[in-house]
Picture 1 (cartoon, rainbow, N blue to C red):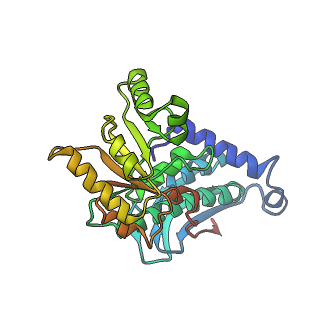
Picture 2: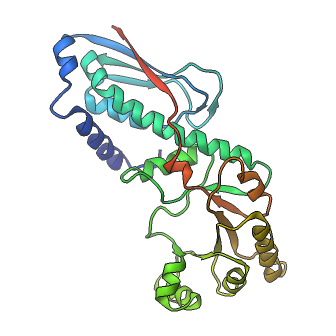
Picture 3: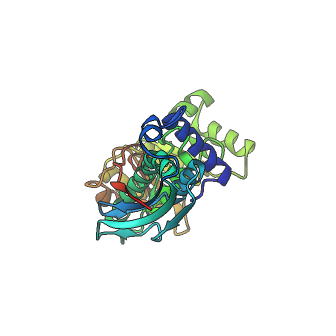
Length: 285
């Protein structure tokens, strides 16, 4: 998981504070303080499990003694139910960790699973699946790591590590050429991507020196023409890469990939992935 250890600790601590508050009143009232238990975390639906580091950190912060992973993350698992981890320790601690641990695991595994479905849908085309900045506030690092676990690629992490010049930037800068020049002068070490909405904008952007063009909400016919325009402009050498974006789903992604674009960015990977189903089963130790 790419999230830095200190960041993971902080994310988990916030999640536990939200859930536990002053304490688990149910467990404290009904479960003896000295009781110990063993927990099995079970994947109940096919997909890609991811997020066991967050599970382990949740358990650790709740005082669980031992957590052992039983699988390698990032691989599609069809045969379910299947155990993915076991833990043992204080029964109260396991109960305190249960929901937060499963929330992380289900959410991140859902992202990895949806990403894997998109990656499989474009297999053989050469197009790569990208995520976006449409992430849950505070969880971007974890969610982008889940995309990578599902076989996708990470787009820029934030506003700080790459340029993406869009319509509003161009309007405020005065022109696309001015915006690209200003970006290059400010940070020549950073890649520049430019959003284009039609073939006229594509043709103009090809002359700016941008490393990538974002084909925004184009239909497949226009995308195919944009690919041909790029190839013609490049004249046999490697031209800027092309990224398709806007309204992509599992039904349309194959046709988009077959236009010849290099990347397809999909916000739904992180903002609309359904949670993968897991359960935590406890037994007295």
